[in-house]
Length: 341
Picture 1: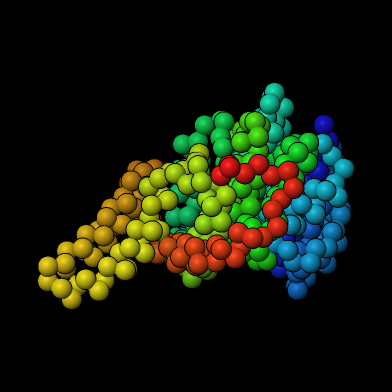
Picture 2: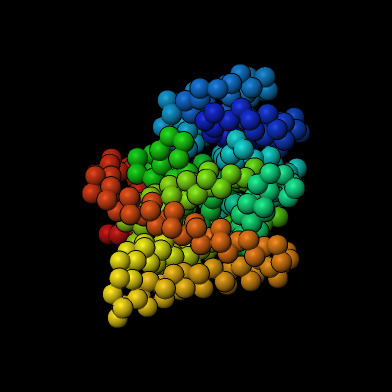
């Protein structure tokens, strides 16, 4: 079956050229039928860069990554749709490995993993290294059949996308925001009876964040959109193939720890806040120990990073809860299966 590659991007001029350079050889060798770049309301030179490659340029109004991906796959002409992000560089065998998985009976989608494009010695390289080490550890624990796939490197059957209506454009993403539209699509496909395959050997290089403030802002957005996600798919709130209950408990625990600070003024209650902060810190140890064992003592830096992340996700979670009554009235997807029913 033919494969179309869809790359959504918004203001991606810093990373788009190496991304396209990595996939054009697949077009020339016949592994890809076409490459579509969906410029989702960029105000930089993304469109001009895309136009210098053998790429079909599609312009979007800035509806967010889910809307951009929908615009791309619906304009494509293939039975298989490969999605990667504009800040990724595909390794030569990334697509071929996913093809092996999706050709198996009953499989509607197949996803892969990351490699890290940020040198450890680069400014902020320690942040990128810690982020990447965690992702690799989580991906290493996933089996070849999962209930969650990210959209940074995923191959879907067009028929499966058509059956469930594609990505939800209304509830789980917004312009320039890392939303939850990819997880939500995977949940619907899995609940609809499709098998989802995972193979960590399929990799795309990624420019992980090197700015602490940028990373923590993205994690606040992560918390916001996860409220929408689990309101619609409550059965997934306890975890999935990528994350577990301990991960999901940390943001509310961080909020609870902050809310307990006033108890410090009462001698009989002064133990509550230290206990909650200590529990949150202890929650970082299982992953931190795994990373240190895998990559060395330098990965102890993951503990304070993930500790701070829990608070940012908590702030996003609180904002998401406040916004939920208004956002829950967003236009639902046609053909979407709702697990809450």
